[in-house]
Amino acid sequence: MPNRAAVRDPNEVFFMRNKQGFTLIELLVVIAIIAILAAILFPVFAQAKESAKRTACLSNARQIGLAQKMYLADNDDMMPIHQSYNSNTIPWTPNHLGTEVYLLPYCKNREVFKSPLDSGGPYLPQDPGLQANDRRASTYWDAYGTSYRFTKCMFTVVAGYSHGNNFPRTENWVVSETMVENPSEARTIRLEMMPFFRANFDPACTKYGYDCGYYQQWSSIGGTVIFADGHAKSITSFGAFDNQIVNPQGNRSNQSTGSSAAYDDTWYWRCD
Image 1 (cartoon, helix red, strand yellow):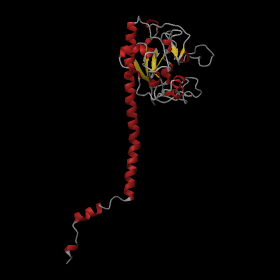
Image 2 (image 1 turned 90 degrees about the vertical axis):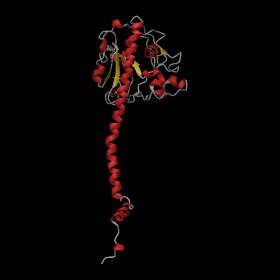
Image 3 (image 1 turned 120 degrees about the vertical axis):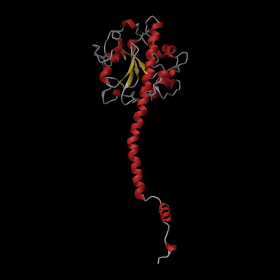
Image 4 (image 1 turned 180 degrees about the horizontal axis):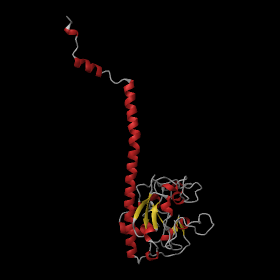
Protein backbone atom coordinates (compact mmCIF):
# COMPACT_ATOMS: atom_id res chain seq x y z
CA MET A 1 0.00 0.00 0.00
CA PRO A 2 1.54 3.34 -1.00
CA ASN A 3 2.54 5.92 1.60
CA ARG A 4 -0.21 8.58 1.36
CA ALA A 5 2.07 11.14 2.92
CA ALA A 6 4.40 10.83 -0.09
CA VAL A 7 1.65 11.57 -2.64
CA ARG A 8 1.56 15.34 -3.40
CA ASP A 9 -1.56 17.34 -3.96
CA PRO A 10 -1.85 18.03 -7.74
CA ASN A 11 -2.41 21.76 -7.04
CA GLU A 12 0.83 21.88 -5.10
CA VAL A 13 2.69 20.30 -8.03
CA PHE A 14 1.20 22.94 -10.40
CA PHE A 15 2.31 25.85 -8.23
CA MET A 16 5.78 24.37 -7.78
CA ARG A 17 6.18 24.14 -11.57
CA ASN A 18 4.94 27.73 -11.93
CA LYS A 19 7.68 28.97 -9.58
CA GLN A 20 10.32 27.68 -12.00
CA GLY A 21 9.47 30.58 -14.47
CA PHE A 22 9.93 30.65 -18.26
CA THR A 23 12.59 28.74 -20.09
CA LEU A 24 15.00 30.60 -22.39
CA ILE A 25 13.20 29.28 -25.45
CA GLU A 26 9.86 30.53 -24.14
CA LEU A 27 11.31 33.99 -23.47
CA LEU A 28 12.80 34.16 -26.97
CA VAL A 29 9.47 33.20 -28.51
CA VAL A 30 7.67 35.95 -26.54
CA ILE A 31 10.32 38.53 -27.54
CA ALA A 32 10.03 37.48 -31.18
CA ILE A 33 6.24 37.86 -31.09
CA ILE A 34 6.53 41.33 -29.52
CA ALA A 35 9.09 42.36 -32.16
CA ILE A 36 6.83 41.18 -34.98
CA LEU A 37 3.83 43.03 -33.54
CA ALA A 38 5.94 46.19 -33.12
CA ALA A 39 7.17 45.97 -36.71
CA ILE A 40 3.56 45.70 -37.88
CA LEU A 41 2.01 48.33 -35.62
CA PHE A 42 4.64 51.10 -35.45
CA PRO A 43 4.36 52.03 -39.16
CA VAL A 44 0.57 52.02 -38.78
CA PHE A 45 0.82 54.38 -35.80
CA ALA A 46 3.25 56.62 -37.71
CA GLN A 47 0.92 56.75 -40.72
CA ALA A 48 -2.05 57.56 -38.49
CA LYS A 49 -0.07 60.35 -36.80
CA GLU A 50 0.98 61.84 -40.14
CA SER A 51 -2.57 61.56 -41.46
CA ALA A 52 -3.84 63.53 -38.45
CA LYS A 53 -1.20 66.21 -39.08
CA ARG A 54 -2.14 66.46 -42.77
CA THR A 55 -5.79 66.86 -41.80
CA ALA A 56 -4.92 69.65 -39.34
CA CYS A 57 -2.69 71.31 -41.97
CA LEU A 58 -5.54 71.28 -44.48
CA SER A 59 -7.89 72.73 -41.86
CA ASN A 60 -5.41 75.57 -41.25
CA ALA A 61 -5.14 76.18 -44.99
CA ARG A 62 -8.89 76.44 -45.38
CA GLN A 63 -8.97 79.10 -42.67
CA ILE A 64 -6.16 80.99 -44.42
CA GLY A 65 -8.04 80.73 -47.72
CA LEU A 66 -11.14 82.17 -46.07
CA ALA A 67 -9.04 84.97 -44.52
CA GLN A 68 -7.64 85.73 -47.97
CA LYS A 69 -11.16 86.14 -49.37
CA MET A 70 -12.25 88.38 -46.49
CA TYR A 71 -9.15 90.54 -46.93
CA LEU A 72 -10.02 91.01 -50.61
CA ALA A 73 -13.58 92.02 -49.72
CA ASP A 74 -12.28 94.74 -47.40
CA ASN A 75 -9.52 96.03 -49.69
CA ASP A 76 -11.15 96.66 -53.07
CA ASP A 77 -10.24 93.17 -54.31
CA MET A 78 -6.50 93.96 -54.05
CA MET A 79 -4.20 91.16 -52.93
CA PRO A 80 -1.96 91.82 -49.89
CA ILE A 81 1.63 93.00 -50.27
CA HIS A 82 4.11 90.18 -50.73
CA GLN A 83 6.71 89.73 -47.99
CA SER A 84 8.72 86.53 -47.53
CA TYR A 85 11.45 84.91 -45.41
CA ASN A 86 12.32 88.05 -43.47
CA SER A 87 14.23 87.00 -40.37
CA ASN A 88 15.83 90.26 -39.21
CA THR A 89 12.95 90.71 -36.78
CA ILE A 90 11.07 88.15 -34.72
CA PRO A 91 7.77 87.07 -36.32
CA TRP A 92 4.63 88.72 -34.96
CA THR A 93 6.54 91.66 -33.52
CA PRO A 94 5.64 95.17 -34.79
CA ASN A 95 8.47 95.54 -37.32
CA HIS A 96 8.22 92.08 -38.86
CA LEU A 97 7.42 91.95 -42.58
CA GLY A 98 5.28 88.98 -43.58
CA THR A 99 2.24 88.55 -45.83
CA GLU A 100 0.60 86.56 -43.06
CA VAL A 101 0.48 89.76 -40.98
CA TYR A 102 -2.10 91.24 -43.38
CA LEU A 103 -4.29 88.14 -43.12
CA LEU A 104 -4.07 87.68 -39.35
CA PRO A 105 -6.97 90.05 -38.48
CA TYR A 106 -9.27 87.79 -40.51
CA CYS A 107 -8.33 84.53 -38.82
CA LYS A 108 -7.49 85.94 -35.34
CA ASN A 109 -4.97 83.20 -34.54
CA ARG A 110 -1.33 83.20 -35.60
CA GLU A 111 -1.18 79.43 -34.95
CA VAL A 112 -3.22 78.98 -38.13
CA PHE A 113 -0.05 79.77 -40.09
CA LYS A 114 1.84 76.98 -38.28
CA SER A 115 1.44 73.63 -39.99
CA PRO A 116 1.73 70.63 -37.65
CA LEU A 117 3.88 69.09 -40.40
CA ASP A 118 6.45 71.91 -40.14
CA SER A 119 9.72 70.41 -38.87
CA GLY A 120 12.05 73.08 -40.22
CA GLY A 121 14.85 72.43 -42.65
CA PRO A 122 18.64 72.48 -43.13
CA TYR A 123 18.70 76.14 -44.22
CA LEU A 124 17.44 77.53 -40.91
CA PRO A 125 20.76 77.24 -39.01
CA GLN A 126 22.42 79.09 -41.91
CA ASP A 127 19.88 81.89 -42.33
CA PRO A 128 21.87 85.17 -42.10
CA GLY A 129 19.09 87.06 -40.35
CA LEU A 130 18.73 84.40 -37.67
CA GLN A 131 22.51 84.22 -37.21
CA ALA A 132 22.91 87.99 -36.98
CA ASN A 133 20.31 88.15 -34.23
CA ASP A 134 21.56 85.02 -32.46
CA ARG A 135 18.19 83.36 -32.94
CA ARG A 136 17.46 79.65 -33.25
CA ALA A 137 14.42 78.33 -35.11
CA SER A 138 13.21 74.76 -35.24
CA THR A 139 10.38 75.44 -37.72
CA TYR A 140 9.69 77.81 -40.60
CA TRP A 141 6.91 79.28 -38.48
CA ASP A 142 9.45 80.08 -35.74
CA ALA A 143 11.82 81.65 -38.25
CA TYR A 144 9.50 83.54 -40.60
CA GLY A 145 6.00 83.52 -39.11
CA THR A 146 4.50 80.97 -41.49
CA SER A 147 4.86 77.37 -42.63
CA TYR A 148 3.21 78.35 -45.91
CA ARG A 149 4.82 79.95 -48.95
CA PHE A 150 3.11 82.85 -50.74
CA THR A 151 3.27 82.78 -54.56
CA LYS A 152 4.99 86.06 -55.44
CA CYS A 153 3.22 86.69 -58.76
CA MET A 154 -0.21 86.31 -57.14
CA PHE A 155 0.36 89.09 -54.61
CA THR A 156 0.99 92.82 -54.85
CA VAL A 157 4.69 93.74 -54.94
CA VAL A 158 5.88 97.22 -53.96
CA ALA A 159 9.45 98.13 -54.87
CA GLY A 160 11.44 99.11 -51.81
CA TYR A 161 8.75 97.97 -49.38
CA SER A 162 8.24 94.32 -50.32
CA HIS A 163 11.12 92.29 -48.89
CA GLY A 164 12.38 88.78 -49.54
CA ASN A 165 15.12 87.24 -47.39
CA ASN A 166 15.57 90.65 -45.72
CA PHE A 167 16.28 92.46 -49.01
CA PRO A 168 13.94 95.00 -50.65
CA ARG A 169 12.45 93.98 -53.97
CA THR A 170 12.88 96.11 -57.07
CA GLU A 171 9.73 94.94 -58.88
CA ASN A 172 6.39 96.72 -58.87
CA TRP A 173 2.95 95.30 -59.66
CA VAL A 174 -0.57 95.22 -58.30
CA VAL A 175 -2.74 92.09 -58.30
CA SER A 176 -6.50 92.21 -57.94
CA GLU A 177 -8.90 89.31 -57.67
CA THR A 178 -10.58 90.22 -60.95
CA MET A 179 -7.26 89.96 -62.82
CA VAL A 180 -6.84 86.27 -62.04
CA GLU A 181 -7.73 83.81 -64.79
CA ASN A 182 -9.16 80.50 -63.57
CA PRO A 183 -8.98 81.32 -59.82
CA SER A 184 -9.89 77.75 -58.88
CA GLU A 185 -6.63 76.59 -60.50
CA ALA A 186 -4.40 79.49 -59.43
CA ARG A 187 -2.00 78.70 -56.57
CA THR A 188 -1.67 81.58 -54.14
CA ILE A 189 -0.25 79.85 -51.05
CA ARG A 190 1.24 76.41 -50.47
CA LEU A 191 2.96 74.34 -47.78
CA GLU A 192 6.69 75.04 -47.81
CA MET A 193 7.91 71.44 -48.26
CA MET A 194 6.40 69.02 -50.78
CA PRO A 195 7.52 65.37 -50.84
CA PHE A 196 8.24 65.52 -54.59
CA PHE A 197 10.87 68.22 -53.99
CA ARG A 198 13.33 65.53 -52.91
CA ALA A 199 16.34 64.58 -55.01
CA ASN A 200 14.95 61.50 -56.76
CA PHE A 201 12.36 63.78 -58.44
CA ASP A 202 14.82 66.63 -58.98
CA PRO A 203 18.33 65.13 -59.11
CA ALA A 204 20.00 68.25 -60.52
CA CYS A 205 18.08 70.54 -58.15
CA THR A 206 17.03 72.69 -61.10
CA LYS A 207 13.30 71.92 -61.26
CA TYR A 208 12.28 72.89 -57.71
CA GLY A 209 15.60 73.89 -56.14
CA TYR A 210 15.05 72.36 -52.71
CA ASP A 211 17.08 69.19 -52.23
CA CYS A 212 20.43 70.96 -52.41
CA GLY A 213 20.56 72.35 -48.91
CA TYR A 214 16.95 73.39 -48.28
CA TYR A 215 14.78 70.27 -48.31
CA GLN A 216 13.45 68.36 -45.34
CA GLN A 217 10.59 65.91 -45.63
CA TRP A 218 7.50 67.12 -43.82
CA SER A 219 5.11 64.57 -45.30
CA SER A 220 5.62 61.35 -47.21
CA ILE A 221 2.41 61.80 -49.18
CA GLY A 222 1.63 65.40 -50.10
CA GLY A 223 1.19 69.03 -49.12
CA THR A 224 -1.55 71.63 -48.90
CA VAL A 225 -2.22 74.25 -51.58
CA ILE A 226 -4.55 77.28 -51.31
CA PHE A 227 -6.10 78.69 -54.47
CA ALA A 228 -7.21 82.18 -55.51
CA ASP A 229 -10.88 81.32 -55.03
CA GLY A 230 -10.15 80.51 -51.37
CA HIS A 231 -10.44 76.73 -51.46
CA ALA A 232 -7.63 74.46 -50.27
CA LYS A 233 -6.70 70.86 -50.99
CA SER A 234 -3.90 68.39 -50.49
CA ILE A 235 -1.69 67.78 -53.54
CA THR A 236 -0.01 64.39 -53.76
CA SER A 237 1.69 64.45 -57.18
CA PHE A 238 4.20 66.68 -58.92
CA GLY A 239 2.06 66.52 -62.05
CA ALA A 240 -0.86 68.24 -60.34
CA PHE A 241 1.50 70.76 -58.74
CA ASP A 242 3.29 71.58 -62.01
CA ASN A 243 -0.01 72.16 -63.79
CA GLN A 244 -1.27 74.81 -61.36
CA ILE A 245 -1.49 78.45 -62.46
CA VAL A 246 1.01 80.75 -60.72
CA ASN A 247 0.28 84.24 -62.08
CA PRO A 248 -2.83 86.29 -62.90
CA GLN A 249 -2.20 85.87 -66.65
CA GLY A 250 -2.78 82.11 -66.39
CA ASN A 251 0.75 80.73 -66.86
CA ARG A 252 1.25 77.32 -65.32
CA SER A 253 4.04 76.34 -62.95
CA ASN A 254 6.03 74.15 -65.36
CA GLN A 255 5.38 76.36 -68.40
CA SER A 256 8.43 77.88 -70.07
CA THR A 257 9.04 81.60 -69.64
CA GLY A 258 11.05 81.71 -72.85
CA SER A 259 14.13 82.65 -70.86
CA SER A 260 17.33 80.64 -71.10
CA ALA A 261 18.62 82.00 -67.80
CA ALA A 262 19.15 79.47 -65.03
CA TYR A 263 16.34 79.39 -62.48
CA ASP A 264 14.15 81.59 -64.65
CA ASP A 265 13.20 79.14 -67.39
CA THR A 266 9.80 78.20 -65.93
CA TRP A 267 7.04 80.20 -64.29
CA TYR A 268 7.65 78.17 -61.13
CA TRP A 269 11.02 79.87 -60.79
CA ARG A 270 9.72 83.30 -61.71
CA CYS A 271 6.66 83.24 -59.48
CA ASP A 272 6.74 80.59 -56.79
